[in-house]
Length: 250
Length: 351
Ligand SMILES: Cc1ncc(C[n+]2csc(CCOP(=O)(O)OP(=O)(O)O)c2C)c(N)n1
Ligand code: SF4
Image (tube, protein in one colour):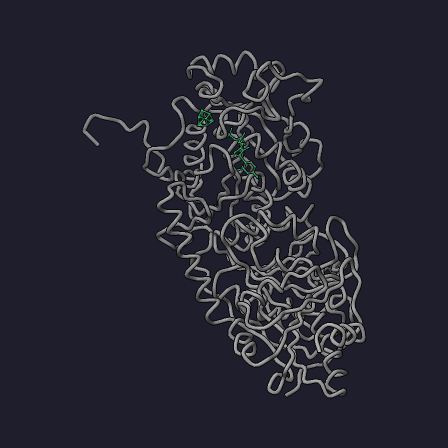
C-alpha cells in the first residue's frame, strides 16, 4: 500500500476475481460479496460447502471460492441435508431464489426446516422468476405485473404472495429466521451481521437458520437499479417487513 | 470357508448387504413392496453405525443421495416403480455430475399406481435412461435372494469404479421371498473421493459438483466423455448366465424372476426331450450382447419371457438382427406365469 494511505476496503479473498453475470444493480452480487466477507472473517473457506440453486444464482459456484454442489431446481435443501448428515462438522449453506425455495422446492424447504437441519439457507426474494425472464413467483405481490400475470397478480385466482419465512418460523425446530435487505448501506451492515450470526449458530450446532433478502430484479421489473430500490422500499417492505422473524430463546 | 448362512427376505438381504459393504448413508421413502429395506435399516443402523433418514418424498430422497454422494459418501436408496419415476430428474443430474450411488427398484406392476404385485415393466425405464438426457445407469437384475445380497456389493463396486449411479432392478416377489443367503463379512475398500465436494480442506483446487455447462462446445465434450465411459462399461461389465445352452435348439431369454420360472419350464421341456436352453442377462445395462450373440447362430428360435408387455425383447432383437424368429410370452398387471403355462406356450407356438 502507498505510504500515507489507509486500507479501508478490499475485495474479500473468497470472492473469486471474475466478472459475474448478474445484471447491473442486481442484489445477487451484493449478497455474494457479503457471504464471501463473512466466510473470510470466520476463516471457514476450507470447511464450507455451498449448494447453488437453479435460478439466476445457478453459477454462484463460479464466484465464491469454496466447494459447491449445483442442485436441481428446488432441491438445494435436500442436497444440503445429504451433505450435512455426512459431514456434520462442515459448514453447509444453500443459496436460493423464491421460485426455487418457495414454489418447486416448498416441500424440501419445509421438511429440512422441520427436521432442524443444521444448515444456513440464504433466500433471495425478488418477487419474480429472474432467470426464466420475469414470470410470476410465489412471492410476487398483489397487483404486480409479470409476464405470466400481465394484468397484475390477482389473489383470488393466483393465491396470495407467500411469506415463507413466517411459515417456517412456526416450526419448532427452526432456530433463527430473519428478513434483511441490501437496498441501502444500513441494510447491508445489518445483513452481514445476520449472515455471520447464522454461521456461528451452525458452528454451535443450533440448527436451521434462514436469512431472507428482500431483493430486486431490475431487469425483469423493467426498472433502473435506483427505481428498483425505491420500489422495493415502497412495495416489498410493507408486505415483507424487515427484521428478525424468529430469534433464539437464549 | 462358508460364510454365515441365514434365511431372509430379498429386501432384508439388500439392507444387510448395504451395512456389511460399508454404506455410509441411506435416504429413502416407504413404498410397498420394499419398505422392509428402510425398516430393517431403521432397526440396524442405530446399532451398527451410519446415517439413515426417512425423506419427505422420493424427490427429496434422491436429491439427498445426490448431495451425500457428491460429498463423497457411499449412499443408497431403494424404492418401487412410482417412487423411481419421481427420482428420474435427480438421477439424470447424478449421472451428469458422475456421482456414484446405488439404487434398487423393487418393481411393481403399473402403469400408474398399478398394483403392489410384482412386475418387470420398468425394464425400459431402467436401461434406456428414464430421465432426460443421454445417460445410462449400470443395471443389475438378481434372480435370487442371494443375488439381491451379492449385487449390493457389486452395485457399489461398479458405481464407484465408474463414478456412475448403479441400480438393482428387481421385483416385489424377489423382495418379499424368503430364501437362504450366505452372508459376506467384508467391507468394501473406501473409494477415491478426491473429486468430491467435502470442503476444500488442504486441497488447492476447489471441487464443484455440477452437470451445467452453458457453452454447447463444452457440454458436447462432457457428453463425449460420458459416452466414452459408457463404451468402456459396455466393454467390461456385461454379465450373464447360461443354462443348457451347449446343445440348445431353442433359447429362452429372461431376466430376474422370469428367468427362475423359465428355468422350471426348461427343465420340464428337457425331460420331454426338447433341447431348450436359457440365457439370463445379469447386467441388463450393459445388455450382455457378447453372451447372447453367439447363441443366436446356433438355435432355431428364441422365446423371450417377461412380466411385462415385451420390453427386453427390444434388446434381444437388436442383438439378433433378424437371424432367428423371436417369440414373446408375458403377463402383466402383477400376474405371474406358471412353468406349465410357459410349457404350453412353447408347445403351441414354438416347437
Ligand atoms: C424442473 C425445472 N422446472 C423449471 C425450470 C426452469 N426454471 C429455471 S430457474 C426458474 C425460476 C427461477 O426463479 P427464482 O428461483 O425466483 O430465482 P431468480 O432467477 O429470480 O434468482 C425456473 C422456473 C428448471 N430449470 N427446472
Ligand atoms: S434477471 Fe433479475 S435476478 Fe437475474 S441477474 Fe438480472 S436482475 Fe438479477
